[in-house]
Image (spheres, helix red, strand yellow):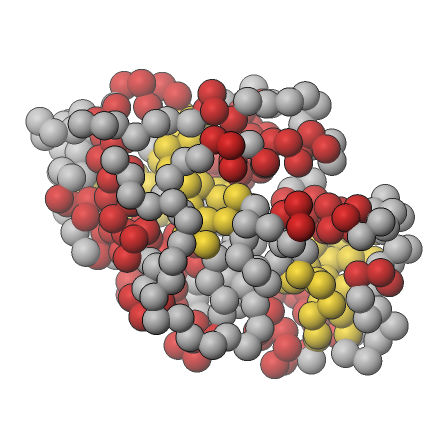
Length: 341
């Protein structure tokens, strides 16, 4: 059984700004060496080894802080203990990772839940969710504005231009939710698609009035461009909002139940380890391509392993509310319950 649900961090350190969590395509670059590349894989048969149906699997992810447990599981031998040889590959975004899975180049992938559900409901693939990853902690999604500028709070956003990493994703949707919660007309704004590394600069130069940032870009944006936080959008209806998880094609899950269960168990162990900040900081330096100083400042997301249907249901419900899905989706039908054996 999975022991882990929500987080209880050990050895927490003070943090200056906010948030380390990534949704669809949030981080643009990351280191390709060190812990991020993992141990060099040795050629092995794709066939099972007796304990699992498929012993060598490929897992793809977008470069982000929230995949740190994957590397903990590999570096500490948790996958090996389960009879798995996990080959890890990076993708540019959650959408790209999902496409690798659909194209047969990856067995299990990490992404924000939005592109997973969009691909599933759009008929691109029959998907299942095999493990949770992260949810939003306080200050993990932060709207920033130019220091000393006209936008000083979320109440000033109507009629303004807001930079987000991508359109029709969790990035603009969570801003809409925050505006709606504050009684603002979220349709009376212009969302401008801007890559995360460029948002702080665009805000500082007045190219946009505000921008949505996550770590490490929040810390770097404050230091390099002087942008200042004006609102934490992961509050109220979006408090502890589920952001990303691990998915696979239904066909893979049906054909490889022992393999999926082994992956779940290894990730559960690694997620427990991820509650200790001292253990996770060296890993996130590579998984997010940041230095030790930045890693010590970021506010980590809530790492999860348990797939809680009632909590995850919040994702499709919000997608329906803001027009990303046309009709209600029962998330429980997509969840692969962990094996009790």
